[in-house]
Image (cartoon, rainbow, N blue to C red; front, side):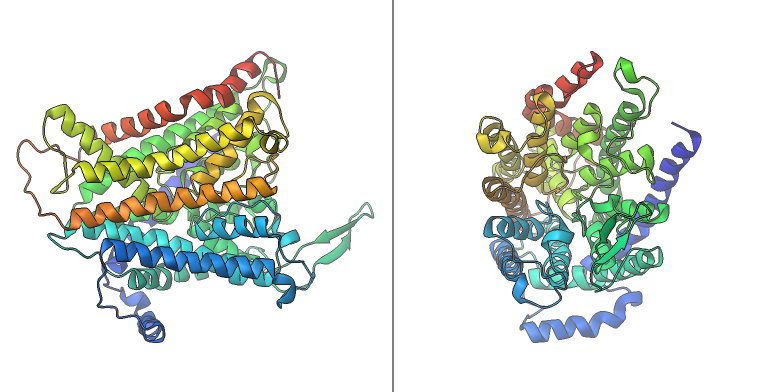
Length: 564
């Protein structure tokens, strides 16, 4: 690893945290309804949306009503997307006359974008019209990201409020998240991407001749606008089949840097926003330290594995299989860790070609619920469940009833937290287990042995964790897999959202308890260490056996010169 590559990584994180802190302050103000002056010109649009939609912004909702509104809204979005995809051949903006999707693939794709997963069992330039890309997928990129962000406001209200039975208004939260946060950031990034050569047009596909005289078709389309929100909203996916490894999606070193930065920008900023809203920034710092330690550990393991681990017959060679020569190993590995830590799912290299330990790092990030910064909203509320579990364990250790931010954590909250952590894990293990003993799973693998297990394990991990990245080489576009993976996405999303909202509602209805000398401090480095330990232990206990059979076994085999 050369000096300029180290500088690239240091510069990336300096820029990330320098931008995330002020953005976190901005987010906190929007969450609280204190719209900053720089976007106050959008207030009339907000009022118009409420008037047209018949929304009363002063109306408050209970935890159940909030969840029901969220669920119904997302369900309607799913139905709209599936209809657009299945009947896109009858709709405009389809210059290539692309046919409608079959139901299993349309079902999988609609659930994927509704749940912020953006898993793609298709190639965008082959299966989707321009209208489908814009009105179905890009719109859902905004709405699914905004849905995740609303949960931060819900958690804060649950912690801050005393003896309250309401958690705000979902429709107001959703509108503000989209209008004041996601839309302005996406517009700025879209224009920057266009200036760097990312395409944004409605042209027919171009048929050109290469210098060898071979005919080649170059896909066109409104790509920049979708790419901006897919990264900022940690949606992932790709306008084109090979995602951000394609020059029309990611043409220059600057676009690669900015897109990777955009993936983590809001996830880091939302932790600062949480600290501002609860008026206890040390609490946010403790959580951010835990996330950062886990993230840098995974990054170091991945980089070390890629630069130093190769079988004896290939020592001294930096592996470039599955990587774009324009991007290189360093930026590819950084992206692989960022995208799996942030439930983003976009890729600029093929993860199937990663060294086994790099693949393990990507898998482990997703298996823990992608709480290492995590997705927009999703990463923080996933980590919130681990925080409650840590507080509960700490309470047992010191012999006191657990408390967090002045609220007692009781059996109801812990049961809900465990449901939110375990159900996605069950989908991963049950799905992968069925896959490796069934014809529909084995026939979709392109490799045998532990690498083949990693392929199918990655597919169910990515979908259950609402990540969306693919291991490559695994054919997921079969009727059985489209339905099963779609169900995993659904469970992975709403089996976490429901407990979080119910926990927030339960906390909101409780009285606040003053801290005493015996209260376990949750803003200390000791708490950060305990939180890291809980995340690692839960992940290890749940997934270590299957990881041993997959990437760990492959690593040990490759040390002996065996490949798969």
